Image 1 (cartoon, rainbow, N blue to C red):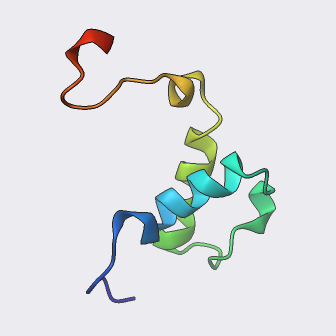
Image 2 (spheres, helix red, strand yellow):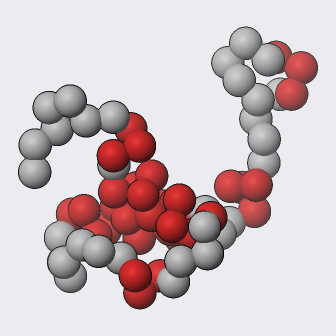
Image 3 (cartoon, one colour):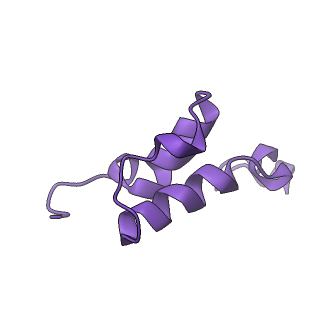
Length: 66
């Protein structure tokens, strides 16, 4: 896999997180068993279901939310 021209939203982690947020099943992971991309996708998917994922920390410039 090449990362040239890739953005953060192209990462398996973000794709897994988005899949969870859009109601996809964990089993819908498109990456092969044992691959680093699958591991990243599953980490993103599982991370989206934690209470910490629901916390809004604001932006870098928004110091009032810290």
